[in-house]
Length: 433
Image (cartoon, rainbow, N blue to C red; front, top):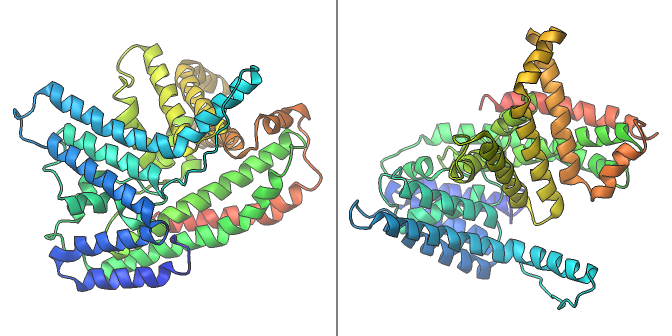
């Protein structure tokens, strides 16, 4: 079951009615039961695994939340490392082990060395990537003293398994989410349902109208090698509009469901294709993931506070982790590397870019439009890596010159452009919700 399945509508209606009909002190229990039931529809056995992991995470957080002086600094660091290690091990075992083991086996076979056959077909727990990132976040925030107190076990599990955001985020930080579980917080039923309805409408238009109608155009554009750079550019633009409508639409649906329950989840997108640079794009795209990577990967590595070379290395490593987080594939890793190098290049070339802007007399709206167009083009090439079938498809974009396939322009103009304009209007409406 997901937010778009037929069975979710009556499930959500029952959960919403039970939540608002319950006394404030029991509403967290209603959310716990609803989240467990939502997951059990998919796989009850894997639900048991995640609940066990959540309870282990709670034990770690309780230890980290003990009063100052009870634990030595080295002991607290050891507990934090243990807790993060457990989440990383869970993520690696289910999501990445088969991929890396298969890659190692392929390398051994290519080198003519004996390789043991592997028969790995492991079901990945639903929402595991989001679950593990939230588990690490609540550990880190507790360790840094940013949480006023350790949450109860029920509140902790609800935070990790909250069903509207379980499958596609956003990755809410523990502080604002746990604060909304406080029985003293009394959201307005009328305002919650109104705001939830607005978000659900915007999300449904993006996901069901725009993304679903762009999906066939994406499949056609990426069906084989590109006729040339022109065809690749049209494919990149088509996929750019599709993935934004699809992902932000689903996020709006998740935020809408949460709003109907009185919860305000984090904004995850803010007109990302209006960004003026690749770095700004990541401040507008999947914002909850971007901020998570900044706070729990980039900054712990030293951020940009050490040497310039170390800062660039930290940035590339962080984006590699972003690529790997999206899936167990070398193309995702290449996508992360591309963005890491792109952002490093943009930072390193800032003095040269400023001089170029002065020479070309780029000012005001012309400058902004030029920067947005260039940023969109660079991001679009990244989408070719992300969605492409492999390196051979990227090579075809340049091997055949600037040509465009005979049948590429018509579907782009008749389908993609109108839906992209509709998405702009819908996005403007969603920005007011």
